Length: 425
Picture 1: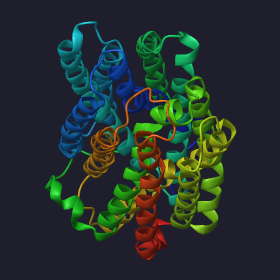
Picture 2: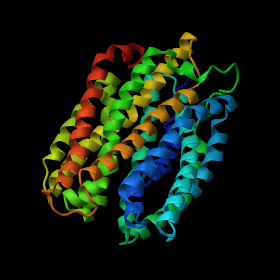
Picture 3: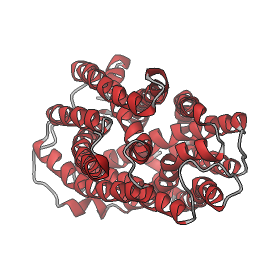
Picture 4: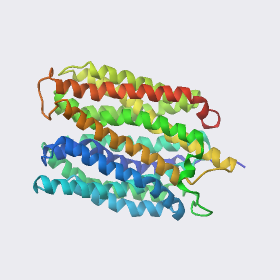
């Protein structure tokens, strides 16, 4: 007898925790480079190197955290342990002391480490929890969409708040860090109180971590994710610099980010409907085409092209909705197929630990490549000569490099689409 579908209220309760986790991710991956370069005075290339090393170290432990989480088997308890670490780390990270470059560098490294540990343990178990509670492919994509709608809401609020909290960016981010603590607490209570419990995952023998790669479909899905993720992470690293120095519209930064993430949330129901009608893979491919066109258009912009960039933010934001919801839903489908067939290589935590590793490695690689690359070609923060080599390099790295990588991701997905269709579509 088929299980009753999840009530909407339980899906919404599960999704609520996505709000503060995404709220934390925006300043963590977008504002921190600019904050420590401008307010602390660290060289941009040094900030990029620190982000590369700390993100890479963080990514390396994710698969181990995932397997350890499967062994313990209590998703709620592990999330409850992780959230205080995340809250303390975020509040400290966004409030660097005025101790000079050496003190600022040490503060950056230590607070990033604390924040990443809390964020990793929470997100691995939260995403694995979502993969374990859906009974059908459509229910799993609805669970994922619920989480990502809340997540996009969190990003929109995090993008809009700094300009409302204070005129000085450093002060605004400090206030934002402290506001994050009660927001996290309220959302966590809503999720713990109302979301359905995940099945126990700690019973039975534990497969070696390398077993997650036994499924060729997972390896290929991970490859597509890696290529597409790098293409998305590079502009995320450079967007504030692009808006401030290429478009010379720094005062519009918050508005552009809000447009981007609001359109991502508004587009999500459309992508879910498209996936239901044509399959998740084809819907994902359509979103990649939209993203590629947006990147290419962005390279053609000049200073003051605010309306055009707002349209680009709307289009690329709509593509983001699919990128957030469909790949994790495909992974949940693959895991469900494995459980039904009796040959699941490992628990959901191990899979999402590897998934998180790839996602974070993309962000680390983007920061470690993009920031030193634009610095190598002469870009300096605050440059105003739009014809300079540095700003041309910034525009090309922000727009054309991601477009080229996204084309590779699209071709891989097109080549392997039959691997992901059938039961998993």
